[in-house]
Length: 631
Image (cartoon, rainbow, N blue to C red; front, side, top):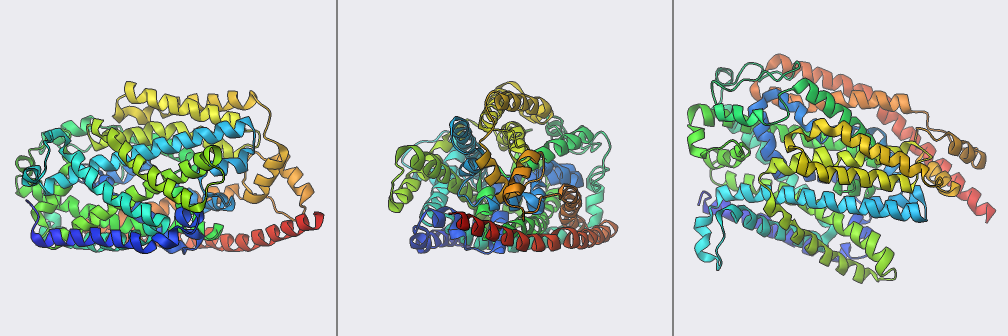
C-alpha cells in the first residue's frame, strides 16, 4: 500500500461528504425536471462557472497534460487547441447568449425552436440525441479508464485482492477501480441532479486549488532553474515554434523520443494551423450536447450565461497550470536525479502515469490524501456532469416525447435514476480501450469533427432545415466511426477536412431534398435568438412584423473580441508556466499582455453586453405586449 492511514481517512471523508451533499439536496432537486437538470435556473453565474471549470479539471486530462508539459514544455500550450480550449471564448463573446435565449432544457429540445415540427424536425431531434449519447459514452469511457490507471498506482491490487471473492486478470484491475469510483459519483448525481453537481464542484475545486498551490511550492523548492535548463532539451522553455517541433529528447530519454514520434505534434506548425481551423468551426458550432451546454442553460439570463463562460477560463487555467507545471518540475527531478525510468518500469505507452508516480514519491503523507481527494474530485466532477447530461436527453427527449408524455414529476425523476445507472454500466466499453490517448484522439478528432458542419449552419443559414441537419450529422458520425477503425488515432486531426467535407455534403444535399423550415418557426427563432449570418429573408419579415427590434450587425465586433479573447486566454495559460520556471521576462510580458487584452474586452465586450441585455429585454417585453393585444 502506497498510502498512509491519514491519506485513506481524508479520501474516505471526502467520499462520504459527497454522498451527504447528494442526500441533503435530493428533496430540492426532485421538485421538477427544471430543478433536477438545470438547478431551477436559480444559481449565480460564478457558481456555475466554478462548477463548469471543475468539470473540465478532470483527472484523465490532467494525467495527459502533465505528460505533455514534461515532454513538450511550453509548446504544450497549443495541444489543448484540439478540444478546442478556446471554444469558451466563442461562448463568452456571443454563443452563450444565443443559446440561453432559447430557454430550453436540453440541446435536443433546442432543435424544436430551430426546425419546428414535422419529419425534418423529428429526424434532426433523433440524430442529436444519438450524438449526445455517443459523446457521453465516449467521455465516460475516457474518464473510466483514467481513474482506474490512476488509483492502481496507489492501491496495488495485491493488497486488496485477498479480501475480494473473485479473481481479476491484471489487465482488468484498473477497470475494477473505475467501477468503484464511478458508482459513488453516480449515486450523488442521481440524488441531487444539477444542484448536487454544482455544490460538490465548488468543494472539489477548492480542494484542487489548494492542492495545486502546494504542488507548485514543493516543485519549486526541489527544482532550481539551473536544474531545468541542464536537463530539458533546447526549445522546451519557449512557446514559439517553426514548422517542426525541434524538441530532441534522444540523448536523455530514448523511450520518450519513441513515444513522441507516434504522436501528431512533431509537425507542430501544420498541427496548430489544423487545430485552429478545426477549432474555429467547432467553436462556431456551439457547445456539444453535454454538461457544458447544461451549465449554460442553467444560467439565470443570457448575460449571466456569457459571464459564466468567460469566468471558466479565469477560474480553470491559472490553478490548473500551476499544478501541471509543478508536477512537470517534479518529473524533471524524478528522471534526472531519482532514476525515474527504472522505478516506473516505463514503456512507450505509459508515460501518462507519470503523475501518480510523482505523488507517491514526493508528496508527504496527509497532503497526498488531500491531493488524491482533489484529483478524485476532479474525476467525479467531470463524470457526474456527464452522467447528468444523459438522462436529461433520454427522459426529456425520448421518454416524455415518445413513450409516456403524461409522466408525473416523480416518475420522471425515478426514470432518470434508472437511466443514470444504465449509462454508467454501459461504460463497460472502457474494457476494450488500450490507453487514455486512444479515446481522447477519437473524441476530439473524429466524433466532434463530424458534429461541426451541421451545427455551424444551424446558427448562420436560414435555409438550413431539419433534413439537412439529420443527413449532415449522420454522415459525420458514420464517417467518424469508420475513421476509428481505419485511421491511426494520432493522425485523425489531419483528416478533419475530409470529415468536414463529408458532413457538409450531407448537409447541403439534405437541405435541398426538402422544403425550408416553416416561416413561423424561423421568424420566432430569429426574434428570440438574433443571430448574425445569412438570415436576410427572415430578418425582413421579422422586422415587418415587429418594427422595433434591432438587427444583429455585430459580426465584425464579435470576430474582433474572439481574436482578442483567444490571446487573453493564452496569457492565462502561459503566466503560471513562466511563474513556475521563474522566467521573469516572459512572465512580466505575459502579465502586461493580459492587462491590455482585459481592458480591451471590458470596452468592446462587457459594456456592450450589459447594454444589449437591457435593450433585448425591453424589445421582448414589447413583443409580448403586441401579441397580447392581438389576442
